[in-house]
Image 1 (spheres, rainbow, N blue to C red):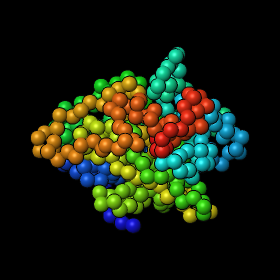
Image 2 (cartoon, helix red, strand yellow; image 1 turned 90 degrees about the vertical axis):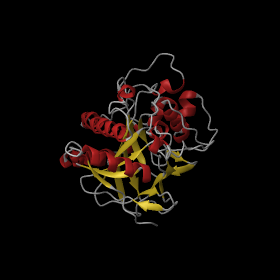
Image 3 (cartoon, rainbow, N blue to C red; image 1 turned 120 degrees about the vertical axis):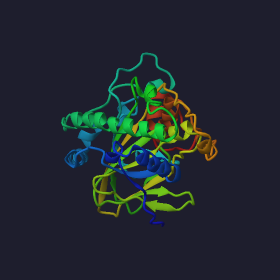
Length: 334
């Protein structure tokens, strides 16, 4: 187990020293694909409040949680029970809620357009809905800021990615609890995120997230006080021709008798948005490694296709019940 520390970037310095911040951002995501972000402007009290609400939800009776069971949602929203998700065909030991943009179902939708629709909200905890909607709005601002700095750091106009996010961005929030399990150490199996970037809030003093280094070692990524853990997804790899590389990561289940809360926020463009390809400067283009080719996990440049691929694999019960899709490939998360 490697103990190499991930870089720490301070977004508060980006206005006063943008060139330095952008160089650090480019370096961190070219080498690691992950970093800690401080100076993001989200008050610690808000993070603590949301983590507390998550604990209140998971402490509810099973019937109250199943009121929003994911099998009720063709859009893969709502509550997934323990063991209700797969990665690489193996059971992930976590329970969670999935929340996306609140929208009307598209009549007669096909393929990834079937991901658009309403959320399911627990009547036993009405405070959760406004808290998560406010969280979505705040973290969207952080995501937009980072994308503008990435664009500038890679030689493009800072608003290069804005059009893909202009109409109905398909963000996703997961509220997750990992309980200890002596029989299954897999909180979440090794995977890459299918979107653009992820901002992860983790309970203080907890462990479990690991990031795969370029040499194949697993690096621990424990929480840093006041920081989000940020990683790029497959679409930024596509946009940069592999100069930025989406990195595999996994979560180990905590010790038996303990548990862990985490809340990842996935900043994604509209379902039908194609991620634009950055015209990299020659010196960066020469260092681009190309987009990963994996026949078991094709990467699409349209976000909805990438998301649909991952959702039907991770939740085969929902895919079969609502969409008549029987499992035909190894499952992957998100």
